[in-house]
Length: 131
Image (cartoon, rainbow, N blue to C red; front, side):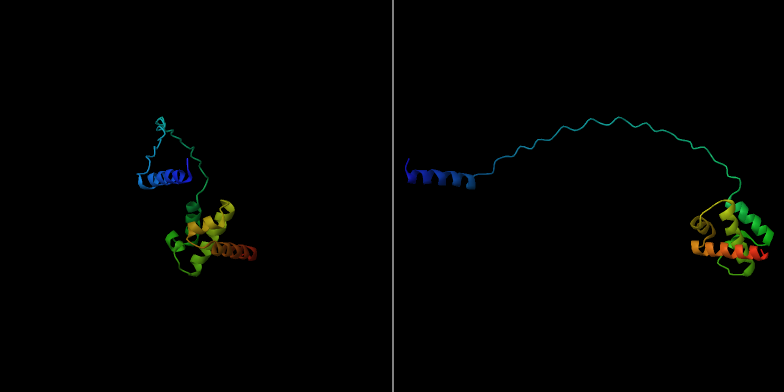
């Protein structure tokens, strides 16, 4: 085979690749996985744990002692008798129920730093004998 014949053959194969339609690609699709078995629903009933007193019981008790209502204590009022009741409720929730400051804050609709300050002030009043 001569050089020219080899070139013609090479060019012919190149032209065939360039100008013919692309080869068909075969895409192999894996079989679908078998359907999952139906799940059985398990009903879990948690035991109900009774706590001796709730936060609301303590709050109502303090409100009755101080002659105010719970909605007044939970309001934004800064009236002295309401503030004292608020501080006592926060103190009792902290030390009788062991609630954290953020939890007490959510219950009393106050920031946790406000709750902590109220507890400190109530402790100071108790130390002076004014509470």
